[in-house]
Amino acid sequence: MNYNLLAPVYDLLSDAYTGGGIRYSKLGHQQHIQPGERVLYAGAGTGHECVRLAARGARVTVLDQSPKMLKICRRRLNAAGLEAVVVEAELFSFMQKRAALGDAANFDVVVAPYFLNVFSAAQLPVALQALVHLLRPGGRMISVDFRAPSSSRVFSWLQRLYYFPPLLLFYTLAHNPWHELYDYRRVVEDSRLPLRLTTNLVHPAWGFPLLETLIWTKL
Image (cartoon, rainbow, N blue to C red; front, top):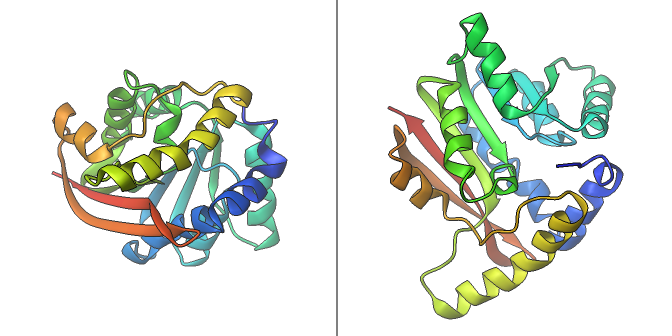
């Protein structure tokens, strides 16, 4: 999944397509994180939310496999005079390295900002399991993404229509898998992951409730 091509324009594209919704949805969870907590941002990209959280005193680890995305993130951290652990790696290799060091499950919070939708339907439960494995017991798993399909047939159709252009763009340019709009609550339940949903935040894109944050606690 090559995001290097998109890195210079990623924030501009997401702001234009969602009316700033993606940018602001990535910040909505931060009120639930305390200074000093160990936070992993998986698939952090350009990392503006990582900088904001580091400024609030959290101990932030940034994980992404795109060097150009991480270059922008590092530049933002340096400009703000802040520090974070920045790791260029793929999720599963990162997890294996931490497990080998004996410190796999020690994050207080794991955040997946528009990251889980880069996995195929078959890969998604495995990726979620890997992220949960990195959490300490009682830690929080946070997903920020497109909102799960509504029970309303009309609004569900609108959601899928809105989801199609970014799906096509990232399928074409970043080689992301082609898949339906995900319902992460159902994936967690079907995978029997040790998570309890505690918070559901809905965010607007151009005034429509099309984005959401889900916060689970690890049991």
